[in-house]
Image (tube, rainbow, N blue to C red; front, side, top):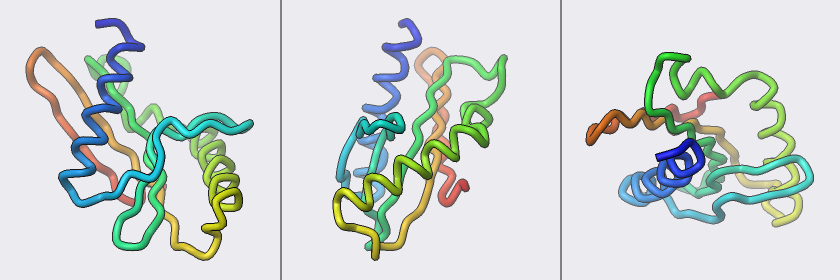
Length: 116
């Protein structure tokens, strides 16, 4: 499986995981002039912007470490644009990271709620 396929599969697994946790999926792969947000969901009245990172190895760092400060700043801009466009400015907001590490048939899932 190449990187692109792994990333796509990871986002699919992430959506299923979130649905099992009771999240409502609002949008996936939302694009704007600022970039793309992997998953936008709702959790108990809070709009949650979720960055999904999938890796097949941690040799070059964990998936969570890949969400750098510059990536966080871009996600803030994307979120602000989404909230304004969809008239959700008054809703509480949270940023999560969903980390998936796949090794063979095993998958480690780490959900960092309020990651930044």
